[in-house]
Length: 164
Image (cartoon, rainbow, N blue to C red; front, side, top):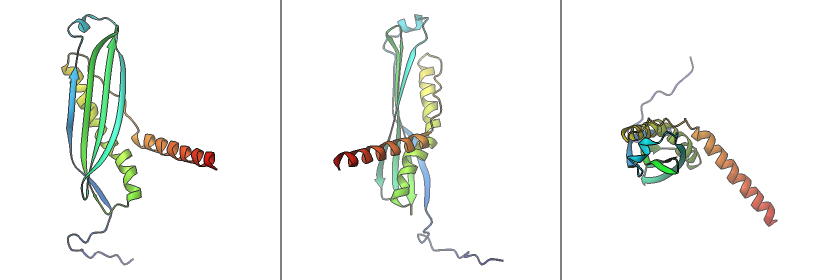
């Protein structure tokens, strides 16, 4: 049998990398239906525009806040049916994670963990505003992060070649 180090290390001596969600919460939520009640007479399905944003802030030595911002605008017959603005956040505890590995988690994996809850808040707000619930499509934040990283690398390469 292979030797395994099973010694228990004193508290604080653990050097294994770890990330865990501490909490998640609605940081800001706004719902408006500026054309109510007239909009409820419209027979035209609204055109819906959705925008997302992700931000990361270090709030303590080993704690980062990741926010997912969701802006939804629905228009029908040139009238604004509703506007939803949500900032949904999560606190993540980080220990012994190299800096080069932290960004992929914070911009790819953390939003993936938060999005289902943000999606439910948006759906409930729209439903509570008198409209059919809005179910946002799932988003692959990891793939979006990799695409953005590739675009930045391509831009840096193009910029370096242009300066040569």
